[in-house]
Length: 356
Ligand code: ADP
Ligand code: MG
Image 1 (cartoon, rainbow, N blue to C red):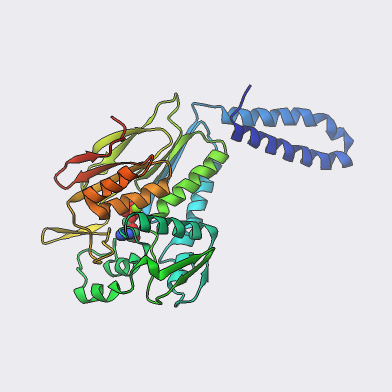
Image 2 (cartoon, helix red, strand yellow):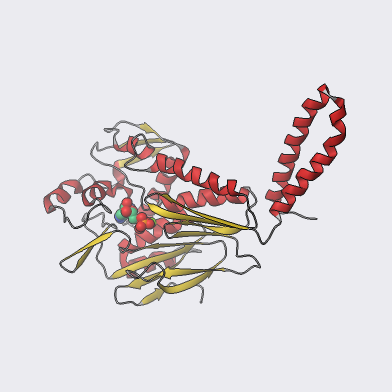
C-alpha cells in the first residue's frame, strides 16, 4: 500500500513514540512486551484509516483579523487540525495587528525611530511588502498606516477627515522611511507607521496551508474573509469552483466563477469597508500619494496565484493602480492572473485567466 509522503512521516513519528513509550515500560515489566505488536498494529490501523477516509470532511468558522474565517478539510475528521489552525490565527493576530498592544507591528509603530527586533514572520512579511512596493511603483505601501488611522474603517460610519489632517499625515508616509536589516526594523521618521492589513491574511493563509499539508491534508480550503486558498482539489479530483463576489451585491451573489486546484483566489474591493456620503463611496483602499480612497472606476480586482500573500498584495496594488496599469503589471508577472471588474460592471480578464 503506498501512502502520500506526509502520511508516511506521520505514521513513522507515531510509531517511534509508541516504541519509546513501551521500551520504558518493558524494562520494568517484561510481561507487557507481548502486547506491543498488537497495540502498534492497532495504532497504525487507526492512523491509516483516518488518513484514508475519503468521505470524511470537517469544517468550522471563527472570527479573526476582524473578519469571518472558515476552514474546510476533506479526507480527515481530525478536529485537532482545525483547532491548531485557529490557535495559529490567534498567534498571528497577536503578532501582526496594528492595534494590539505588544504586537510586532505595534512595537515598530511605537519605536520612536529606534531599531526594533521582530519575528521571522514579520520580517518576511515586510520584505514581501517591500517587493510589492517596488513592483507597483509605490501603489502598495504598508506605510499608509497614518491615513488608515485617520480614516478609521470599519468604525467610521460617515466622517470625512479634515483635508488638513490628511495633508499633515502625508509627509510621514513612504516605504523608503522604513529599513529592514535581517530581523531589525527601523523607521527614520518617529511619526511614520505600518499597517499589514493589505497582505497579512494572504501570508497567514499560506502558512496555514503549509502546516496542513505537512499534516497530510490533501484537500480543503482556507477562507480568511474572502481570501480563499485551496488545498488540492475536491474529492474525486474535481476542481474547486470559486465564486467571485458581485461588488456591493449580497455575499452570495457572484459575478463570475473560476475553477482552481490548489490556487489562491483573493479579491480586493471597496465594498468590504466603506461609507457613502453625497453619492460618493469612501472606502478602505487608500492611495498612498493622496491619503484618500482610490476612485478610478474599478469595483474589484481578483488575483489567482500560487501564493496567497502574492495574491493579497497584488489585489490591493492593482486596485490602486487601476485597470490599465494594474493589467500591465499582471501581464508582466508569470503564473499570476487577474479579473478586474469596473464600476460599470465590465469584466476584464488577464490573458491566461482560466476559461469558465
Ligand atoms: P481586505 O482587508 O478587505 O481583504 P485588502 O487586502 O485590499 O482588503 O487590504 C486593504 C487594507 O490594506 C486596508 O484596510 C488597509 O489596512 C491596508 N491598505 C489600504 N491601502 C493600502 C495601500 N495602498 N497599500 C497597502 N495597504 C493598504
Ligand atoms: Mg490585499
